[in-house]
Length: 120
Image 1 (cartoon, rainbow, N blue to C red):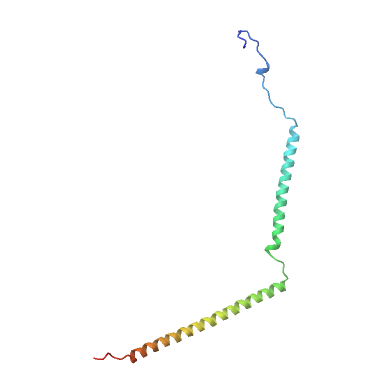
Image 2 (image 1 turned 120 degrees about the vertical axis):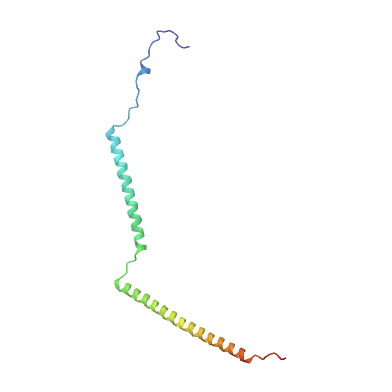
């Protein structure tokens, strides 16, 4: 039961401010924070360097200048051959279209002159 007296003892423990005290010193905590920061940044930089180093070989293969010149010459030759083939095909298509047009004109002419008039 609670003490109902007016002159109850005042307990000093309940009126003091209690705070948690750190187990380790402030210098040790700062040192650990700096150590974790350095380790994390080092790991990040190492990962980025490793990723860029691994993909380096796939991006640009190292070729001798002569091999590169040979590849370039072969590519130019292939493009020139393709262009010549396309031009020949275009000429052939144009000639076929002209011949078809001439044949169409001739058929129309023959139909017009060969038709018989209906008997009366």
